[in-house]
Image (cartoon, rainbow, N blue to C red; front, side):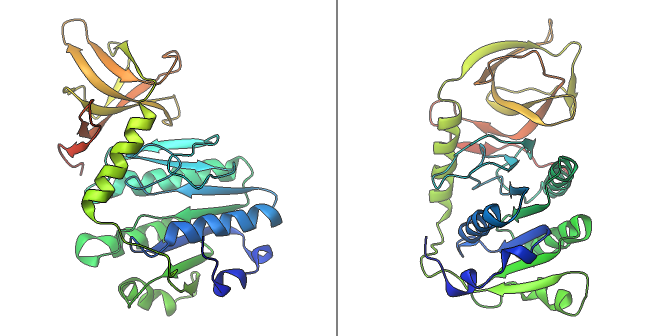
Length: 290
């Protein structure tokens, strides 16, 4: 990790509330967020890290968002004791902005109710205003009311978001330089990385039969083979993910490939919007939620 002087000049003792880290993919956003989280762990009593990228996150399998107050490893999928996890249902926020915004709000609120004083929120790399990136970030700002927005950009790509914010007193905007070691991976590389993370997550998975007869299925029990689903507790947080292997409509049962050891605490099933090849674990979108 290349530590920039601008990073070291930050005084972590004055940071409180929710800290939003914003930037395009490949600018070192997540590296800075992890650095900031590490600094805060040494100066604040209760700190949490929200991995809000359902496509290239590090604290959970793709299609999810996770918040934790534990130590974070450097390699992908270092799940070191997640506090809460929500299901986006896709590896992209595009077409799934409502699950991203609602999920982030629920995760931050849950952490705050548990006594967390500072939340470092590593957001997605979707910033293109033509794809809804600006509106997505503004929705998070208006809902979460962060105290500081750390903005990392190469050449003005965040200006559509920052220009109105700089004229407002609703939060402090701190511009940070791009790390010289930051690299922007192409789409095939990102897809291969997700497949590797899925493969790690399902490495010890087993086939389990789950009855949905007396269980809520969101948005509806329209199962299909190889569909990615989330099994959730009564509060709507993810217990584990599964891949649909078989559907028996007559008995209202579905066979899932899942690493979840126990099915006892499952309150509901959330259907995702991607299918996974159970051999390669490459994902393919099937639909987008409104």
